[in-house]
Length: 58
Image (tube, rainbow, N blue to C red; front, side, top):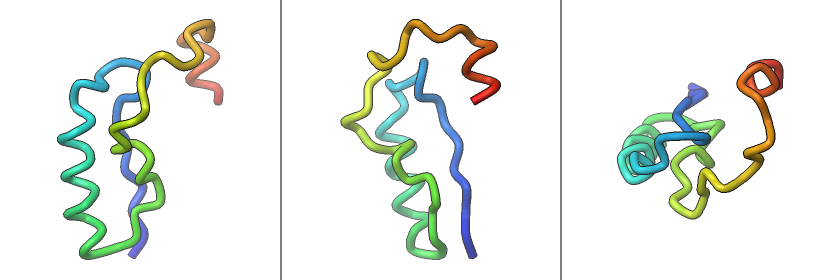
């Protein structure tokens, strides 16, 4: 089974540890295609110049 895990990246990085733990649990059962969401090294300091509309279209 393949799982697409979605979580906040632009805002909500304070929950990265929770996402990481959930992804680790899921990986024991299936392939998680978006494991980068739980990467604790990611920050919300990325592309702040994007509007909400641009993010939704990506």
